[in-house]
Structure formats: structure tokens, C-alpha cells
Amino acid sequence: MNGRNHKPSNGLISAAHASQLLDHIVHDRVREVIDFCGLLYFEQELWRALLECGLPREQIPSISAELIARAFARIGEQHEKLATGREVVDEQLPLPVALD
Image 1 (spheres, rainbow, N blue to C red):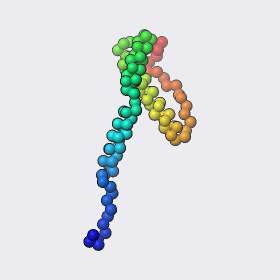
Image 2: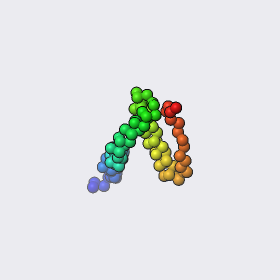
Image 3: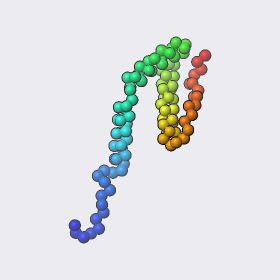
Image 4: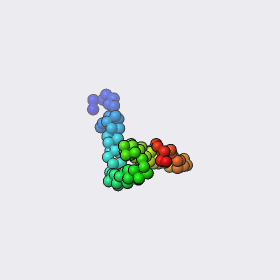
């Protein structure tokens, strides 16, 4: 060293790059733990059940996707409540269509 004040490095990579890498790692790990084959089979069962309920065939894909998306949202909300110590209440969400 030549005696000047030498600032220590802030790290090997930038914070933005580290954040991006972490996002990719978390995404990959979450994909590894989700049973996509099981989810596909469940979605097929759901389609069949909705069809048997008399729903119009053309609406079944969007209704099924909405129901599954709501389930994932509820799981996320419940996880957040558990992680923060808040009480978990399993609220009843309205269906996207009436199943008369």
C-alpha cells in the first residue's frame, strides 16, 4: 500500500446483482418444492368437477385458474400471518361464478 486511505470493497457484486441472483435462487427452489404434476392432475379433476356442476365448458379454464390462484393467495396470506404471529382466520372467499 502506498499510505493512502484505501476504501474497502463493498463486495464482489453489486447489491442489485445480488438481489437478482437471490430472486432467481428463491424462484428455482420454490419450483423444486411444488409438485407440478400433482397440481396438473388436481386441475384436471377440478375441470371435471366444474363440468359436472353444469358450468359452461368455455368458462371452466378461467374459473379453474381463478380458484387455484385464490388458493395460492390464501396460502401466502396464511404463511405471512403465521410468520408475523398474527392469528390465521380461514375466510370464505366468494366464487367467481354462482354454482346454481
